[in-house]
Length: 381
Image 1 (cartoon, rainbow, N blue to C red):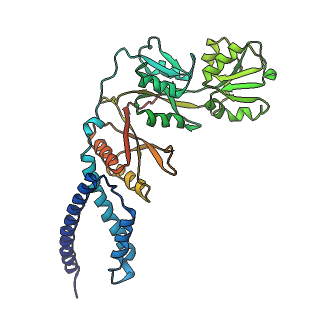
Image 2 (image 1 turned 90 degrees about the vertical axis):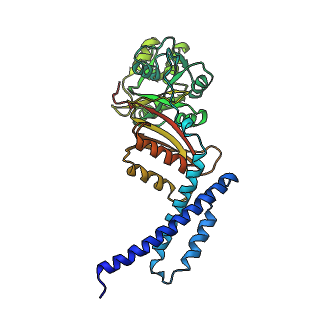
Image 3 (image 1 turned 120 degrees about the vertical axis):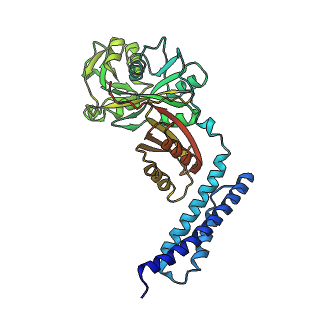
């Protein structure tokens, strides 16, 4: 009777043959990768992969191992594609992708909203020295354009709220304008209904606010469905508009600070749904900046529209012992069912494991960009 050692010796012999054949296959994959790069051909060929699987399954003498063989072939082809992606990635300039720039000195700062906005609060909390003559912008996109055109060096704007989630327009603009995240700041948000000093609640007919103000205060407005809710540039712009209108029938959702700045009265306090309502603000600039204290990395990428690609990529974070913080998807403009993935994870781009993970994402992606490496905000202001 054959004992366990005999079986193992036979397996060892087969493994040696498999390794030799695997090496030959990888060498052929390298040659194919060079050909595809030279002729600008896509790495993934779905019909070819299907034929490979179907043809090789016919070589089985028994259907008993069909599922395992299918998985084996899928894995082999995935590894072959990784080799080809390494070849294509080698043609890219990693030094340029991960180039770190020095922070701007005596920087010109901009923020979203009118004086008294939550973005202005975030700006004052983030920068150690109060910015000199900060410039305010009334739309998210105008702030991005201001940075791109050199009007300002850094801009402050909201990216995520604890009750309403990600602010998708800001994510889309990060992709569109190619700016970098250099910092972040949490601000506890208390929304108040404000109006002219002579206004009473029973006089209100219209309420103005940024859409986020309405979304964060839905419970309060269930009791005031007769009021028209009118979206406006920002909460602080809404406060200024109500003041300038002189109309006792208009109200705004804004901060206590905005009410004080514009000489308005608080008609209803803390109308937000959640008492711990908090917004995360990001500080964006033209260039990637980082220092040894940075502990949060953000990227955006897209993958082949193929089953299992996201899983195969994300499992490498466990391999590199990296903690994922957040993943958010956004549709690619003009492409049906194609998505960009925004990913935040712990680490510094100078860490070896993070650098390897970034290289892996880059070579595995159809599109890839490092959005930033910053110090994660930890305190609510």
